[in-house]
Image (cartoon, rainbow, N blue to C red; front, side, top):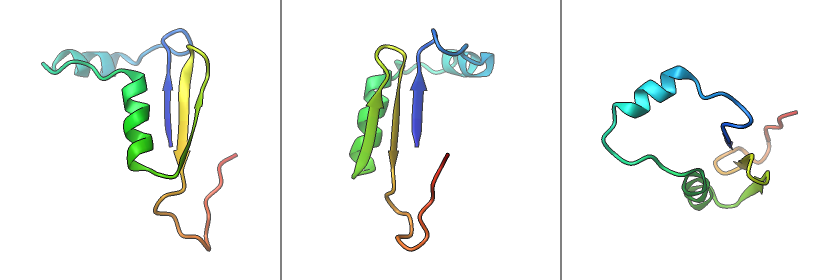
Amino acid sequence: MLAVFSGEVVEVPAELVAAGSRTPSPKTRASELVSRFLGSSEPAVSIQLADLGHLAYSHTNQALLRPRYSC
């Protein structure tokens, strides 16, 4: 499962900001993260919440006779 939210919805934890400032590589956009997840977790479901965020999930690599559900 992947959830990416806008800064308008939640405040970014200071630890993530500090860790991100130490990396020389450019930051990955939310849409790219979701695309990578969907590409590596087929079949998957993705929901975009306007400009507020993305939710995506997949049942890839889960046992068919013991499915996991989240409520």
